[in-house]
Image (cartoon, rainbow, N blue to C red):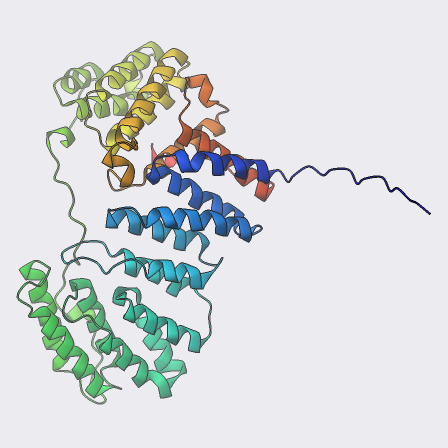
Length: 443
């Protein structure tokens, strides 16, 4: 009889566990727009094999997302959650989507519908469950999340229920604050159902016309006129067994409303350089704004390998250094981060390590100014793109080329977090991924 068994040898924790502990330590201290991104990325990596840990990360991330005052930033993060881990707990992700409000009047983005659309298009559920989902989406104000595919499925595979599904869609149409995109979507459904559901189609057209005739319909007059013309055309062909099919090509064409772009200012003029020598391009660049100055020099050094524009390495180094100096005068926008990231990369490739270190330091300073938690910038995106995407791409470039952040004098906690995410990806997947996103995103 063995009275005293030897204690079992302690097992080392799985390779991903200490990495997760580091992420849990760093992410709460990052600026919110970066820390939330870190948590979502980590949850996406862990979800397939370690759902419990992924859920804990998401719970913390969502609680932070809901405190963000900017709807666009909040919506972008919720959409990132839905796209990254929608299969982890679809019901929970749906409840998070439905916490978003309907798109404000005149806004070009619809985070709520985008989030619900991600779940709707990616879900593999039964017909009854899909019907329930449609009604929850409509009740939550996400009319834009639904597509004609649902009604087409009802018409083809569940004909006895097609009228009920059509009626639900019509009843859920937000007549009082519908956007042009939602009206156009309803008209497409009418076009599909006009022959089989005449009375319901007339009801749908009535809703569309009432929305379009609102005194302050949120679209340019020509867009509203085009939609009214479509509705009028449809009103004349909503009959049982229509004589000929109706195609949208015969209706007035229009561009759907898009997010208003920032007008190009003096910083962003396109300066033609065709036919100029390198010296002439440099002279012209020096007369431009800081952004164009830097951009023109980057373009010049990038074309240096062309046979007709060969520049010696010393000249490329000098021009890249001049562009880096110009970047310091650029406005605090994403473009400044992009320029400094590109120049740091090029100077390192040229073997100019001291200059690359300077570029990395300037990049870190720009990040600090734009996303410092003591400023409003840490609570919303300062441009169209998530800063997490940019710094993650930079981390990928460093890893791809075997560069340690400390080699460039960098100690940015958000960069450290993304280097750990790359290690976590290797730990949970067991293989290294091919890089190159930095080169794609920041050519």
